[in-house]
Structures are given as structure tokens and as C-alpha cells.
Length: 158
Image (cartoon, rainbow, N blue to C red; front, side, top):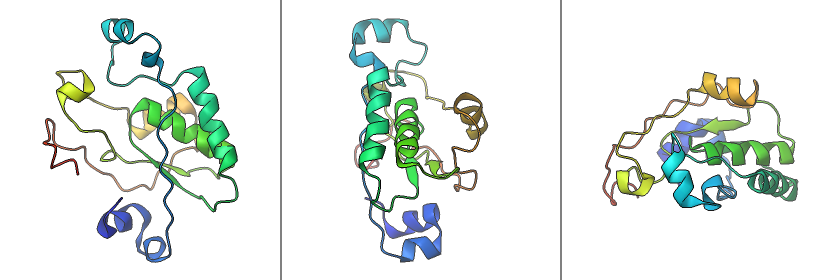
């Protein structure tokens, strides 16, 4: 999933050299899935829908189900639905503060036609995320990462 240099950048040399198991979860149910046409016509950020209440509950349940698996850190893309899923899973797991790392280059293909927007998307800063979701959830020491090039090609996103 991640080449070794990226793992070392995210986790630090000592953690990446140990055996690492990676669980990959898809985000929970998106709010736009209930009425896509209305969502895209009325939302200020149509490419970045939040989770439904059901999606948030499912994320927490996934975390509870994964207890005992040795999970200590969650890496998430900056998309709101993914951040909300990561927070729910972290709470379900009972992880310590700072266990969620937002990694900008963990994102979908960065193209207008996939994100339903002609503008380059922007995402909240770590400070803004903490204002929204509360302090202590996010890892303040996660190395900064850049977003993929806007209108990246299919081969660039692999």
C-alpha cells in the first residue's frame, strides 16, 4: 500500500522497521448518497460530503470490532467523510489522544471529473479540524505532506 520511504516518513524510522500490519477501511455512508442531485446542486463543497448519522455509528462500531488488533495509529485523507470515519474508529478503539494523522496525499484521484468541481479543492488546517472536532484527537507531529498535482493523471495516482 505504501512504499517503504513513505511509511518511514509517516511513522518514523523505528516504527516502520518493526512488523507493520495495515488495516484499510472505507469511509462510512456519505450524506450525498441519500439525494445526490440535491447535494451537488446545493452544497458549497459537493466533493466533500460528511457522513450520515448511520455512517458515524458504523465507524464507531468498526473501531469496537477492531479492539485487540494492536492498532495504535490511524492515517486518514483530509476528506471530511474520511476524517469523521477515522475519529469514530479511534473512539471505538479507545485510542489515546493524538492517534489520528491527517495525510494530504492519501486522497482520491485529484481530478475535476472525479471530485465534481472545477476548482482546486481546499481542506481545513489541523487547527481548524481541532476547532471542529475538539483538541487532542489529531497527531500534531504528523509530517506535512503535499496534495497530489491538480488534474493528476491515472498513472500519477498509483
